[in-house]
Length: 593
Image (cartoon, rainbow, N blue to C red; front, side):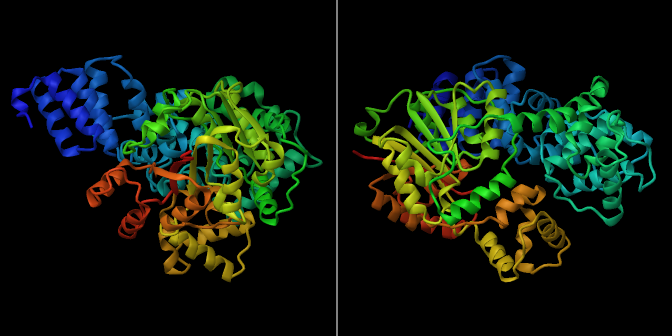
């Protein structure tokens, strides 16, 4: 190999980028470091260093590289987009203050709020001094009222930090008049109410607070109702405990000019419920499912009551054709020309089990589609999905419809799609293979599938907890889900369940319902995936793990499998790295014909 000293910075940057794409990470880093040492102001070398860090899973290092590039060379290539993407994926705060960047991303919705909640909470607790035992006097209340990041976090994210939850609970007791302290400004009270709603009211209500909520509910809905003319503080204080009556929220609209938190409150508790109730949802075929599958019926009922997840924003993606989508999703793939030659630039796509629409919205924003049909069992989930698509300007890009996967053979002609995606749905069916076969039959010759299935190894703590709950006939009501959360946090349950306390889903009622109290959940292994693929006549193309460093670690362990497609070796890898697929297995496969 040519000595780096003999190469120019531009040559080093080009070779480093090539090494990085080939996953020769040490050589890539050496060349890019040498290029920057020789030419620290060269924007391309710094840009490639940032991309290398992203590819390697070092998001914090990538953010630093792109931050420095934004400072040195504003507007260079797609650095702004990549920087914002890194913001949503950070696990630890960088050495510089990113408060302004997070505020800008939250203000514009250009951040994945479900992913970004953890890093925002860390910035608030480590840099802004939000702590469980912080004073809540006039001075401190004024400080947090003017803290826009804190306010936007309450408004846009589900809180996942115990210290912030403790502060929220103390503020709630002050607002209810149960603890001494200054009155909360209306805007802060409004955002605090949205914060509790973002957790779907998963936190407990002590008896004295439940009594306050009862009085407020009676005042706003009973015979002595103060509507019309409801005081904003009454409506917003009730919203700390439950969604207030829409009619009562309508009466405080005139107060919205005082603070954008109040405007957000009215949107959340008045405009959005009315819009969701009126949102038209199409149905494929019959108005009611022809399927009498008992599991499908129970799962549908669950998501009608608890649509999941309630997302707010997305990271800023770049639209690309299908070939580039595959290249980015499968960085180690070495697909034969017979497979890639006929890839459609604008594929027809089916997303089966789209839930509340985050998946199809992301696909529409990342891949140029010929058509995009997204189906789900739940009317409530589809209403939210449709509403969000319109907010994002995607109403003409996505067709939503209610349907059961098992009914699709009677509703859609075979071989209708170039790409079929089913992420997080097959493992909730009574017979996942049957559902997968139905979707397989909708695939055109040479078509692709993207599948997401729960890992038996990674879900071991969850499987243990579900069995523990089933043995004790634990109910699935909101009250019992809250009781389980309370007992788990207090350490009063089986010590074997303690790992669950670290799960972010613990901080949202519907997320926790989905995690531990789901109507149906099956898990898989790499060997099971291989067997299913063989039966379906599909070829495994590779995993797309959420953490790129997993691919790198696999390559280090099994260099003899450079495309990372040997599922037996993946089984051995997962045995040594049991949390590698903690989210789920997400993989691509295709029809080789």
